[in-house]
Amino acid sequence: MAAYRVTLERSRDHWRVKMDEQGREPLRVSDFEERVRLTDEMGPEPDTAFLGLFGEIGSLVSALKKRRRDKDAYFGYERGVLEEVGDVLWYASAFARRGGTSLAEVASRAIGDRTPPNRVTLGEISPNCEQPVSEAVVETALLDLAGEAGDIAHRFKNGTYKDNADAVRGDLVKLLRPLGRASAAFGVSLDLAGYRNVEKTASRWRADADWPPLFDEGLDTDEQLPRFLRVEIYQRPVNGKDFVFQRCNGILIGDRLTDNHHPPDFYRFHDVFHFAHAAVLGWSPVTRALFKVKRKSFPDIDENEDGARAILIEEGLTTWIFETAKEHQFFANTDQLGFDLLKAVNAFVVGYEPQRLPMWLWERAILKGYAVFRQLKEATRGAVLADMSQRDLRFEPLP
Image (cartoon, rainbow, N blue to C red):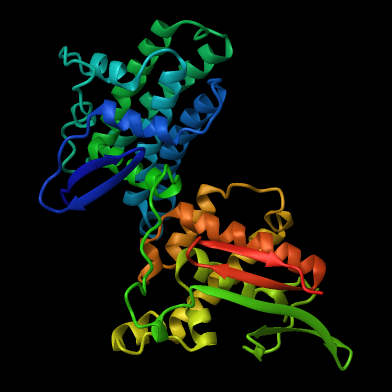
């Protein structure tokens, strides 16, 4: 496993993770917990935190099961284990805080060398993890971890932890020790797992982060996505069949669209999602093609980021999200998107410039696009206002 030098910077409530491959600075548990606090949007009751902790331990056990069942066909095993261990730490911290203690206090007692809680690091819980060991050792450590989780579940059900910080702290100590052994057996560094979790939550929750810079910032306006667009989108029948047309500045753009689907599902209005990508993300190869603003001055970018394959990636991603949205009333009652969906979106664009964009920005783009889509679907005509200065997309009725 490659070593990383990781530094954690804080600006107001925004944290950033920087990595290079020259070494890895230890991550203090107290710093990790501060990040957990900033990204914890669960209620004050401990129930959800407990369920999350119990569920993530189950996912960690499941990773070993899938590895045994699928062997090399289980892709992403090491990455998955690293993520699950980080998630266990996140929920353990959230549960500890609701129980009147802290993960730093728990870790200090777990390692037992009287290190003050504010100085103990995640790596001290499981310092020796350079090489993975046999699956038998991994299984033993995971069974110990699952056993401690089962004991916590039993005591939680019986109300043992109500107003009893000592009981919470003591049982989390017993949980953290086999977690350290399991991570060592997997060959996973708790330091790196913690840092990756910080990086993931920083991508998922905005926490007052600045907008990322636009990909075409500083280029000639002829090669920039339009900073403000007003596109009229309307449906009208042609020879008895409904088509959707798009017009900007009095000029028709793109092809007239149908759903290309049976039964009809209103996908004919889907270009609104490309305009949302352009306005909020600053990325849309489809919009660049529609308005002929490809970055021709940079042949590599023109070919790879603005070319046919990038257009297919955006179209494919849009279609895939649409199928999920149909099952959820086109996100009409959704103010947050699931972690799994957003991670899948990131995986979809790996190798292209939008892979650097945080998940919270993707969430904004998707929800803004579907809010306008629902209005278009209802009215069958309207103007779409794409405002890159505000990273916003709005609907304006047409007479």
